[in-house]
Image 1: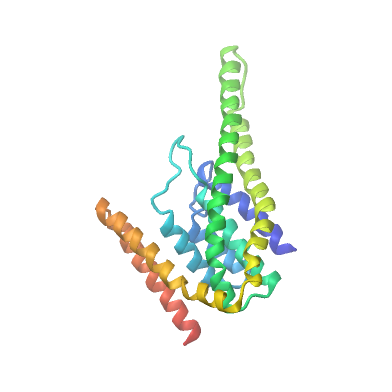
Image 2: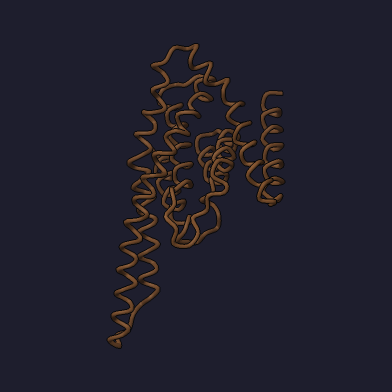
Amino acid sequence: MQIYLVLMVLAGIVAMDTTAGPQILISEPVASCTLAGFLFGKPEMGFMIGILFQLIWFDYMPLGAVRFTDSNMAAFISTVSLFSAERFFGFTEDATKAAIIPALLYGVASGFIGLYLTTQIRHIRSRFSESIVSRLERGEKVSVAGFHLAGLSLSFLRGVFMALLLIPAGTIFCGLLTLLPGSFVNGLSRAMPIMWGTACAAAFTLYWIKGDKKPLLLGVIGGFVWVLMIIGRHG
């Protein structure tokens, strides 16, 4: 139970850090998924899934007032759902690898739910701003810091709410693998290297076209670190 209380707090921090603050990049999938992996005793797998999500959504930044699918919360929730399903349904190693695929699919739905909730919170924040301007025009004293703290709190609560609602559903969704034939599950587990290669190739192509080589370098370093971790574990 304690691990899930920690996960609720971490979910709130991920949601808050994405746009509101403190923006220390803990919300990035490679960081948040790795932390989730540590909590479940599988840091290397959390790191691997985090890199996969990071590559998929690397060019998708929640900058300014743009409406964005909440890929950060989606990655975190999907990763936790996978680890929870492994714990509750007693996955084999192949089933755990295969469950990454439904976790990725679940992340798409989670991201759109995050988009809707973020939009609603922005409407509330707009009313906060209108209230501040109105009170200043009347010559009243206004605690801008108080309004800012309220905005941060709303973002934090959004993350907690999404975790409470979506992690149990995601756990069940990933757990549906237990209903599939073993041969099908084994086939899905073997598809993971293909997905990994596809995500790497897509990210490489995107940034090669843009002429931005720094993400490519970071991706190569991350890939080598992941390979070394896997070799060290099974060597």
